[in-house]
Amino acid sequence: AAKAAGKSAYRRCTQGLRESAVSRAELIADLRRAVDEEQLHLEFQPIVDLATGAVRSAEALVRWRHPRLGVLSPARFLPLAEETGLILPIDRWVIHEACRAAATWQDRVPSATVAVNIAASHLRRPDLIATVTEATAGAGLAPRALTLELTESALIEGSDAVLDRLGQLRELGIRIAIDDFGTGYSSLSYLHRIPATELKIDRSFVARIPEDARAYATVEMVTRLAGAFDLGVVAEGVETERQHDAVAAIGCVQGQGYRYGRPTALAELRAVLAKADPPGVSGVAESGLTL
Ligand code: C2E
Ligand code: MG
Ligand code: MG
Ligand code: MG
Image (tube, rainbow, N blue to C red; front, side):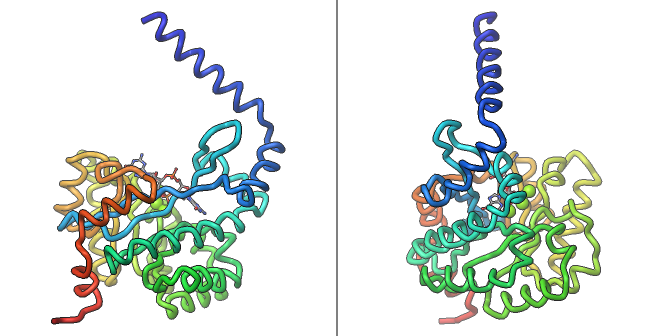
């Protein structure tokens, strides 16, 4: 046991050393090259229909394979990317890559959609529309197969220009999700103005159900609200069977979390999609056609 403890202390120590060995400035310089040198990749986390277990959607999550530090999570480099403006080329790359990936799902699941996260600074840029249009058209993906995930804080600073842009995106058919819903300065009035198509209930609430009555009531309330506003609703961060049972009982429509699958490589996600939904079925149902 002493040996094991020693080993893990050693590991912690070398990890600390490795991190401090790369200065902030170096990391920024490295990040500048990351896109061009193809060091970024995407993982896809399934989003499950709670009633049927079918997977018709996935969220694209970016990772950086740093030449010396190994694979870095977004928490490790996105703040730097935001500060330096490098978030824009990164997000653009993510949008293109995610659209190309989703295009490969359509043969199996015609109604499949992919969700990408959009930084607040990107939302403020008029060229977001062009980026999204080029990415979907270039990949041969229907705009309705792409969801942009925006946080409340990004939306709350929403100028009229941002609202116009969201309206234009909706007219193109792009879906708009409010991510981490409930953690920002939620004001019910902005929900009337933002042309959202779905709410993603933050995992901090889901983590505390079913034991915590207030967390339970919050998930219930947001689910009802989404229903009343005719919005989709996703419970984020579902990890356990009990959390799954609770969100399903509440009537939440979709779930995402380790209970259903971790973020995974594209090939693995394709396998999950194929298993859950044979070609043609949900595409017909969703487009409202009757045969
Ligand atoms: P998010 O959009 O809320 O994404 C969900 C995060 O929760 C992901 O972390 C995912 O791996 C994690 N997660 C999913 N299920 C569970 C669960 O059951 N339990 C727990 N504890 N965690 C779970 P990840 O991949 O580290 O991403 C963190 C955040 O970084 C994302 O939060 C998103 O805000 C941001 N992000 C990720 N990729 C991109 C990107 O391409 N562009 C931008 N702008 N932001 C990104
Ligand atoms: Mg997200
Ligand atoms: Mg989220
Ligand atoms: Mg979250």
